[in-house]
Length: 160
Image (cartoon, rainbow, N blue to C red; front, side, top):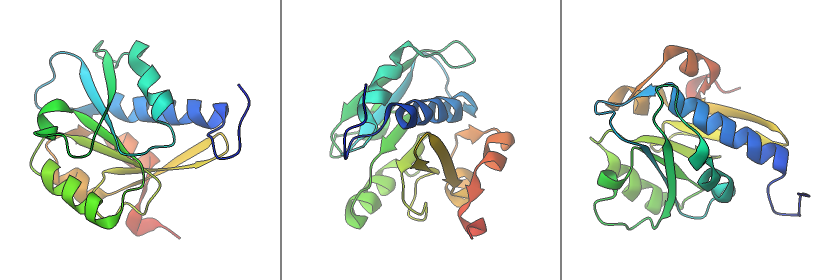
């Protein structure tokens, strides 16, 4: 596969997939039965790669089921254990995180400053992926994230 202008490169796509499955693997939900449901929302750069993680399993053996859903899906939190979003306009982002508040849904966004609500914000440069952590969102969630993952990411307050 060759990189096309405007399309993600294979190395970056693999790194994003590995980072997302790593974050999911070190999270614990209050109810952890059945497959982990990863919902891909809105226009995302790495959506096709994430849809392909179906063959992946979490360390506890649970399979990951990824699927694309529209942002306005009724009862969205009941369909998702985790959401992965692209860059949303501020109103869409606000509405999404209002809908997810109080539910056991881990949230990961492509890019952004991690201020409006997602727990993790990925930043991709070539084959390197780093992430910011919104500690406020993590603390308010009923999803528990292993402290080592939180240490790997940079808190949005620690940015240079």
